[in-house]
Image (cartoon, rainbow, N blue to C red; front, side, top):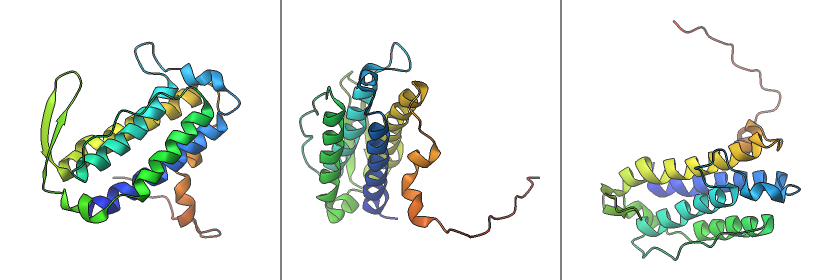
Length: 176
């Protein structure tokens, strides 16, 4: 599977799920500052960091300079706009440039001074996707913990494209 085929649909689908989470929380703008633990970032930042992971991954893989850090949004509408803008960046991504990065060296330098060197495939597998999912799942957990009605169907809403109504479930098997 090419890097483009892996990350662009994945990021696009999961940002759609994130947008759906935020839709369900629209009546609770107080949750933008909610967090799971005192030393964790609040919901508004988790959404922003999810978007940042996408934008930075695309820039690194396409050999572009990192864009300026996304601003922190203070409203539900602002979060939705940030997600929509990030999905726009995905629509403009170059499959050729992303796929060409698979063996290219990616240098990752964090604000705390840590530095990593890996190829594009390792970067996607070991950094970009895990970081993206960490922030997306944390946003989900914050909302769920605070009573927003979310379930697995909200998380994997893109799976409805594969649903086969009326198909019999596979029989359960025992391990061992």
